[in-house]
Length: 274
Image (cartoon, rainbow, N blue to C red; front, side, top):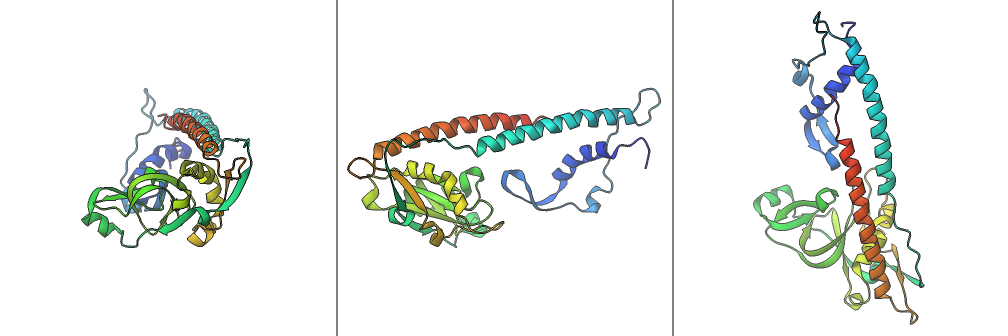
């Protein structure tokens, strides 16, 4: 190996190329998942190296200077990622002005699992405009769009297994689900007293901590049915719908601003130096 070649520099140049060449399945947020890069794919790969104008020799000084500058950039990225993580985990701390009542999820909602018939083969032969939700959290949980639907209502859905088990979504419309997803459908007697966006706000951070397991987590119906929700009550000891709406509105505004800030911070991570 030439003494004028910095392995750190070569690593920086090759890393994005290798990631682009890797074959296999991509996971959440573009992360590599079960990808492979064979030696036969890279053995004839050529890379450009910086050279000196006068002699044409490979410039080690340029490589070292580049790595020094890039280390500053990496430190900056780490700080940005730390900020994103802290902001993402922050939730509005709203003090209830009134008392609350603790209620089990199963008392308020009918819990329904998705259907096993929804497979890749089914998606190919039944393409349409209605979303199918699964355990993924990207793309609002949509794994496919088909020509029929099983639900047409306002409800909550949750991911039942995987790394993101316990992630909850607010839904209002026509959709279907795979077996890796479940729906919380409000019972008739609570339709006018329990505000679904409020329950979504309450569960958005709480529910994922109820998932069982480490890597391949699970949040089954049996686990979910006993999860507790705190709902504001009025002087008559009845659910306070207006208080629920106030909390849900505040949560929506907060998360909107939160996502706006995170989006801007993420744009900083897209900066590249060459």
